[in-house]
Image (cartoon, rainbow, N blue to C red; front, side):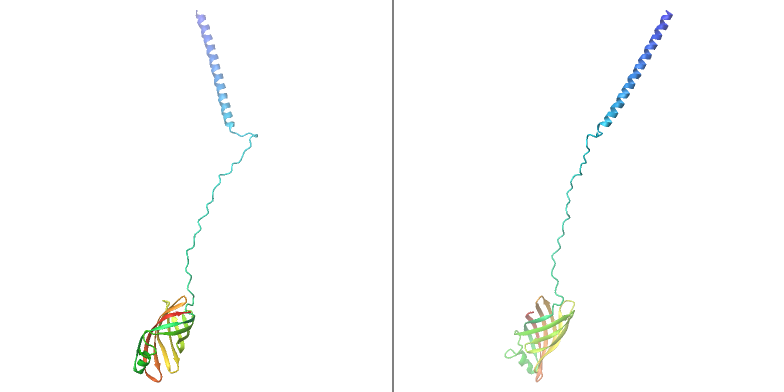
Length: 211
C-alpha cells in the first residue's frame, strides 16, 4: 500500500512536469506569434521597391494682389507769378470828391470826367519777381509807372504816378487780387491839373479786367 502511494505521487509529479513544460511551450509560441505579428504589422506600411513613391505637390495657393491706392484728386497749383502779364478792361467810379474848380471839372455829374457810376478804360503791364511787382498803368490817356508788392494774403499793393499833359493821377491806395486770368479789387487816386486849382479824390473798383 505504501509503495503504491509513492508510485502514484511520482506519476503525478511527472504529469505536472509535462503540463508545465507544455504551458511554457505554448507561452513561447504565443510570444513568437505576437512578435511576428508586430513585425509584420510594422512593415505593412513600408513601401516596397516595386511601389514608386510619388511626391505630392503642396496645395495651390491663390496670391491676392494688394489693393492699389488711388491718389486723391489734386487741384492744379496756382501760377508762381499770377500778376505778371498785360491786363486790360474797365474800372468803375464809386466816388469823386473835389475842391475848387476841379470839383466841377472832374466830379460834376453834368460835365465831369470822373462822375460816380461811370465806367472808364484801364490797362496794366506788370512783371512779378517773387513778391515784388512793377510795371506801367494807363487810365485812359493818363499813363505812368507803378511799383508794389504782394502781401501774405495774396493781395497786391501798388503805388505810382501817371501823367498826361497837365493832368496828374497819383495812386493813394491799391488792393487787388489775381484769380487765373482775372483781376478784381479797389483803388484810389488823386487827380490834379497844373493849371487848375483844386484836387479830386477818386475811389474806384475794377470792373472786368483780364489778361
